Each structure stands twice: as structure tokens, then as C-alpha cells.
Amino acid sequence: MTPPPEVTLVDQPRVACDGASGIAAALGHPRQYIQIDDAIGYGECGYCDRRFVLRGGVADRDGAAAHGPLGGQGAPDHA
View 1 (tube, rainbow, N blue to C red):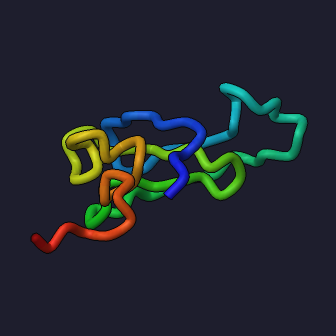
View 2 (view 1 turned 60 degrees about the horizontal axis):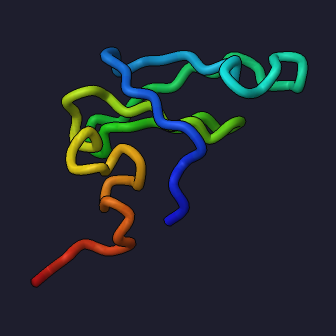
């Protein structure tokens, strides 16, 4: 799994993204409201792929915030 281009830790399960940190608003990135899924602990913007990780959630552990819920492994370890 390719890591997202930017990961932002947040304290609320609902966030807004307008791409302002690296993408000019004039380039067509409308404000998107993203509801973070409790089961995976993060939400992603459909325009800029920024990942919003809920602080203390399931994705905010062991580097999972940068690589997805499986820590970039691609499949769970059943050993």
C-alpha cells in the first residue's frame, strides 16, 4: 500500500479539507467534510488524498497513521 501524501492527526471525528496546505484552492479542490470511521480510525480526502487520523483511535498506533490500518503490511499477520 502506498502511504498517503499527507497525514494529519485530529481530535474530532468530523473534519474539513480544502487542500490549502499544498494545493491552491483555485485548482478546483472544493471544501470536503470527512467523517472519520471509528472502525478504521481515519478518513481520506477524495481530492488530495490527505489522510485525517483520529488521535487515540485505532489508526493512531504503531505507525499505522502513515501506512493504513495494517501498518503497510498489506495483510494481517496470522502467525
